[in-house]
Image 1 (spheres, helix red, strand yellow):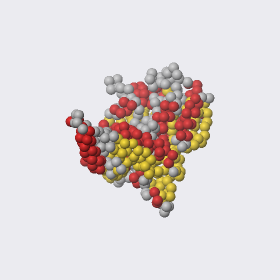
Image 2 (tube, rainbow, N blue to C red):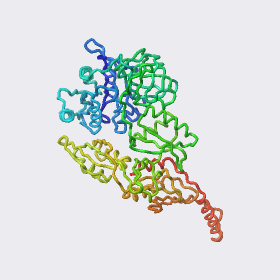
Image 3 (cartoon, rainbow, N blue to C red):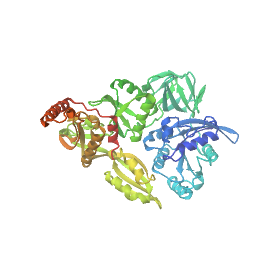
Image 4 (cartoon, rainbow, N blue to C red):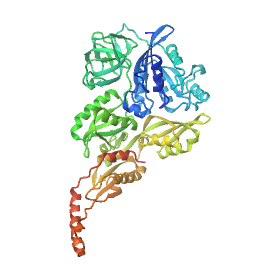
Length: 595
């Protein structure tokens, strides 16, 4: 066991985690030149296209140091705040972390929050300054920031470059010398933590685990503690570029198990695997249950695909444990699921994966956060969906979630950032200069205000320099109203939303204008209205397409034309009473991207 090292790479978005992982894999000979491609661990098309890591990826490397062979288990993690649950799970399976800081940008918000996650789990931190080959690198400034953050010595910081391979050997030596070997007893009862799983259509569910105590052999009879289900370990092995079967895995090892499990409910991330004959006394402390920040309805375009959508979501949940879903129905869209996401990017990625991996065509409704509604009888209801709001006369008050937001930026952009946050009903709590030209601002903000376009706006006003991180701070009373969108007098529940009183009028007007552009014209007039209760606050009319019924009357008396037009008018009126308006998917999506 003292020849094993388990570590992960943590950093802010785009600080070069996956590129550095590529160099480590090449330096240890884990990947040969023929199989190599940039971002070799990012095996999803989506990750390559967007240049971001969505899933954490585990891989085992071997490295010769001073004549002895060491086994290094590396987990490359995502950097985006929407995938922080992946990072927390990776950290739970490791003893050390490489903290990457981009030497051209310095310490950013996600660097700090990921670092706190690692410190909470007592991980050994190795600070690394990446991108040292860049002309814009600021080694002295960034070193000072890292020393302030970690309280380490200057000699502890490794200078590296994921692009050129500078410092890779120093990193591998530091991993061996500074990260402790895993503790655990190979002779004790088996205790292994599941930190990820994937669905394979031929072999069933493959679970990835880290063994804390004990030993597991092929064909052992094992059970999963939280479900109490028992299985034979048909195949166990280690995770290299491909899965490599092994006869035995011992305490400290990271590997996979295939036991022919077909139903996704039986495998839960954070569960403990143990032997049936000699079980461990208690489960490994798994991970905290993830709390979704954002809720949206996901409905199949074709209502017959409801069951297929359920299966697809279950399989996706195996691979993405932060996704939660529960059945719901909508008058406009039929049967579907209320899904919980960690943010707007997470929601976009889930939709994209449903389409690519499972061929599911889905419609997503306007996302919203969860609110606490206190009724006049002093009961507290949790509402994820505007249609779940009780009648207005039975509501005492509504509480909305607030967040504690940390924004780190160049001092030049203080003005626009402050204006953005104050416009979003935020309150400035604190501002601290980290360096002469870098400032950290702390705001109290309503979560509902930041889920749509806050992040994009923050990036554009700060020319990409500002970084943002947040965590939920609690609930506060708010004046919220339910905004309904009516088409020809019928409410479209998929477009209704809960919004603050001050925003309701401009938001309602914008939605009506947007829908007027996007809903195709029909043979009859369509009234698009925004309403609060029975009060209409905005209206647009989509004009009818008219057939030229007077084309055959050339010359002659005007009364002949009038007769034909009156007849057409009566027909239009009749049509409007029974007319059905089709709302295209682009209209649902455009409402999310309202400026």
